[in-house]
Length: 209
Ligand code: CO
Image (cartoon, rainbow, N blue to C red; front, top):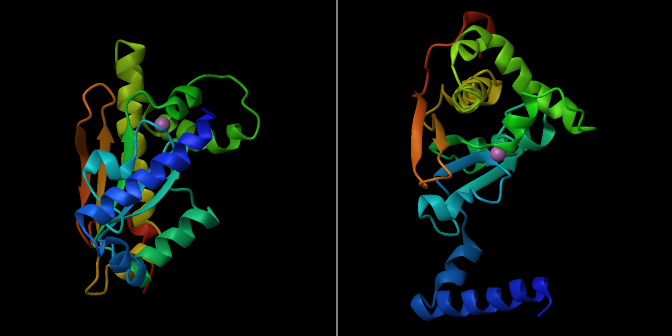
């Protein structure tokens, strides 16, 4: 069978099964989207947001990119963020990294990857911030694992630095920010940093809103 045909065939089976279990499933979703969560994760095929959190269609609004970065000036991410916070009014925003991330690994080398260099430079900047700590770790694996955690932390901070989040934190729909890391070898999510609404932020990043 042609590989892509299998996707279409399996989709039909999946849709049939949903209706079998819950005849109104699609009707309900068609008329309303009200997810409580925004997920900002890595594009890695092994870290599917819905599957690893046991959530169903309609429950998580998802943005994924290489190495789960929150880049100041990324129109795509900022649009997703503003829409999910101001229109969908999500209650939780999760930045999820994963151990064994190819993006983090690539950033820690000197290899030239073309346009990806510009993207990965954001991770090199994280390394420069924490270079002392990372360099004391004895193995390459431990260094990469810690880099993955610190990258999640910095990306979560980047969220808090946006006026979108700071504005939302002043409303009753103030979203809670979570920084998690997923382990490919056992499928478990671990919390690295949690930022409740109005968490302290370096004063220079605070806007007068
Ligand atoms: Co990755």
